[in-house]
Image (cartoon, rainbow, N blue to C red; front, side, top):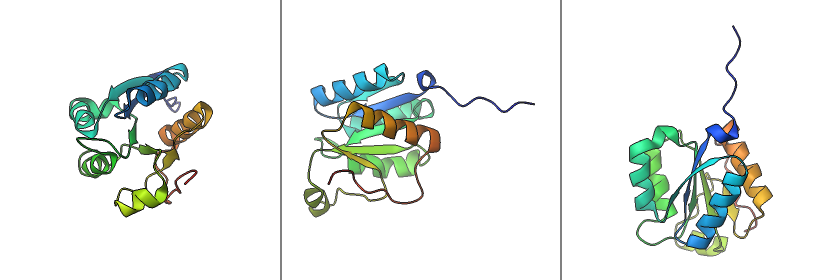
Length: 143
């Protein structure tokens, strides 16, 4: 009996959550060009709505930390209660000192610092969807 093949990129769905249309669109386009299916939400509350309907179909959530309505930190708390196995990747353009001062930084969640190269995004996404979240805390890149 052979072992089932792992899902290919086109079988994986990434939820991109960012309040900036341009950033969300660029991340989504990069992921689609990299072979992923993409869902989009403009804030954490919209992301929760999507996850309540189809969390089992999502393989990774990429979320900006600072957003109106419901930010990334609040979304991560909700996810820990409702879909704890779902990997999360934070993205932020704010300096680490600001994030820490406002209790937004979480060293247990991987983070890419905006701006980042499309290749770095795809590399990080592939790592998270194939290996899952690391048990070791990851440092925020570039902060």
